[in-house]
Image (cartoon, rainbow, N blue to C red):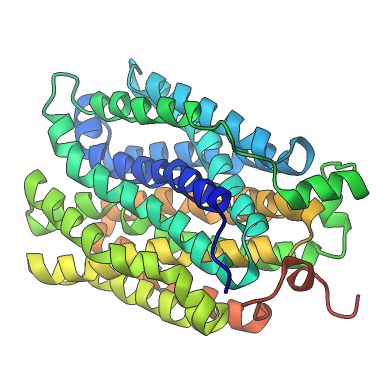
Length: 407
């Protein structure tokens, strides 16, 4: 196995740092929710609607993500980093809940488009035998972003600007990242595709192609997975404070311990996919996710809950390298961005958007624990679909994994 080149190492670091903010943003919203609700007078159901509306941005990212096949991977990555930086800063200045929701919605458009483009970059620029490892490491930096966020949010909440400080602090490293973009090149596969046979992309291109069934299959798997993972961490602070009597400090400590404890497992998840394969790796990861989420919302006692939270945080992060690998590997270069846009952003994210709203209203009736615990069934259903529909792609070049049987 040949070592990675200096450029490949530099690219992996850049993409990892960029993806760091996906985890930071994800954790930030869950950490500030009680403070935001108190300041703006939001009920549990109102908070669920707010989170759901913000998450619409992950669906609207469809418009940007599919441009990766037209503008190129590099240009889109730079646009998304700049856009996310601007709207993150503006979120901290929001005068009311409506402005905050709108600004965060737009920030999510850029953030999720950046994340999807990073995964396309990783799939196209690294050798087949290391593709899973690289995608896993990049995704693991999202978890690292969650760890850092969990550690610093209590300190930032104590500042005069309260929850707004979280968004002000997030702008500084994003500006540095925008400066560090120099030297990042377009992927060789995209450049070759453009020279050999540039493709015209209308809005329905991929659904008119032989790949439409792969898109719909992956959309179902993404959607079912999000029905659980989007709620697993978002509402844990609400649950721990309201139903287990935790203080803000105890919640922060438990989340930090769980996030740090899960980090070695998260960083190893991509390598696991290269060693045992995508299918068997998904068995380990998706079952662990269900067990962790169920335990994190049903167990009693601080340390049992924290131990279950380790598994839940690992699962929420580790399912993504599995699904990112399949979404990148099962489509040709000229449709890869479009595939992400349709399977993940437009169709798969329906579950991502609806789940928090449904859980928020359910929690008002039955409590946060039962409302979230029941979602642990969805990763198991998604796992069944992976085994029913997805081929093994470990160690194969993209040109081979993207080929349709019988084509």
